[in-house]
Length: 378
Image (cartoon, rainbow, N blue to C red; front, side, top):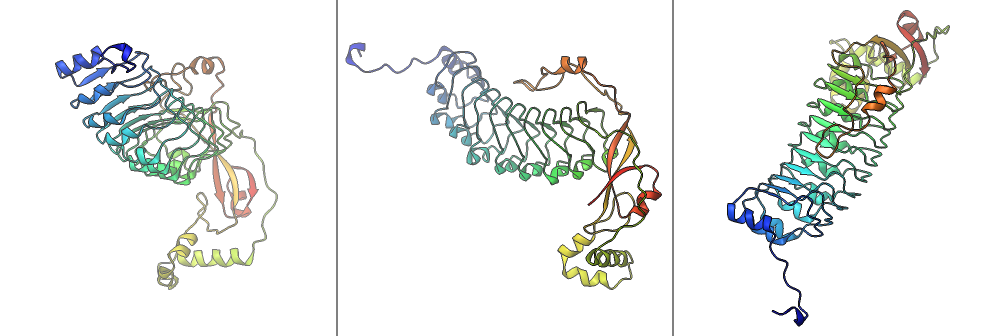
C-alpha cells in the first residue's frame, strides 16, 4: 500500500526477533534499542525462556506477550515503568524479574500475587513507598532487593517468606521492622544501612542462619536481648548512637507495684509448679495463658506490665570483617555499590562491647547483677 494513502505501515519485524524465530533461540536481547514499545511480534516466540528489554524507554508491555508462557528470566531494568505491566500475571514460570531503575511508585497486588515462581525480584532504585501484602504469595522467593526506594514500613506478610535468603532494604526511610521479622528463618544476608531504625525487633535474634548484617547509619542505641546468639560473619554498625559502656548505678532497692502486677506475678510464680491446678484451668483461656507466659529474659523473674529495662554489654568478635569497602548498595545486577570508599575514609574504631537490651523484674535483681548498666522503669 502506498504511504500516500494515509495509513501507517505495520512496524517491520526487528532483525533480532526474526533471527530468534529462525534459530528457535530460547533467549532474546533487545537491550539499548531505544524502544518506546516492546515489539508485539515477539509474541510469536512462544519457546522463549529469557527476554532482555533493559535500557529502553518502555512504559508498558503489550498484552499479546501473554503467549510467552515459558518465560523464566525477564530484564526490564532502566525503563520508565510506574507499575507492574498487567501481562506479567501470565508469566507463571517466571523466576527472575529485574525492575531496577524504573519509576515504580506501586506494585499492582493482583499482578505481583501471580508471580508465584519468582526466586529473584530486583526493585532497586525506584520510588516505592510500600510493598503490597500479596508479596507473601511469592513462597519460592530467595532474593528480594529494594534498595534506594522510599519505604517507610514493611508489611507483616513479608515475614511469611520462609525461603528468603537475601534481603536488601538499604537507603530507605524505614523506622521499624515487623515484630515477626524473626520468622524469616532462611535469611542469610540483610542490608538495612541508611534507614531511620531506632531498634531491631527482639525476634531478629532468631535469625540463626544470618551471616551478614549491615545496620550502619541508623538510629540504633541498643541491640536485641539475644543478639549474641546470631552466627554473624560480617556485621556493620558504624554511625549509630550506640550506648557506650558507662556505668549508671541505682540506689533504689524496691519499686511500688500495682495490685494487678502483684497478682499476676503471684499467678505466674504458681504456674511454674507442674502440680499447680491453675495449669488445667488456664487451658480454656489461651490468650491469657500466652500473656502470663512472659518472663524477664535475663533474670528469669516473672512480670506482666512492669519491668526494668537496662543494658548489658557483650564482647563482640565476629569471624568476618567489621567494616568493608567496595560492597554496599546493589546495582541492577545485585552487585556492588557506591558507599564503600566513604566507609573506608570514615571508618570508626570498632566497638568491642555491644550494648544489648536486658529486662529484669525488679531493682533488687538489677542491683544483684554487676554487668547491668543504666535503667528505665516502664
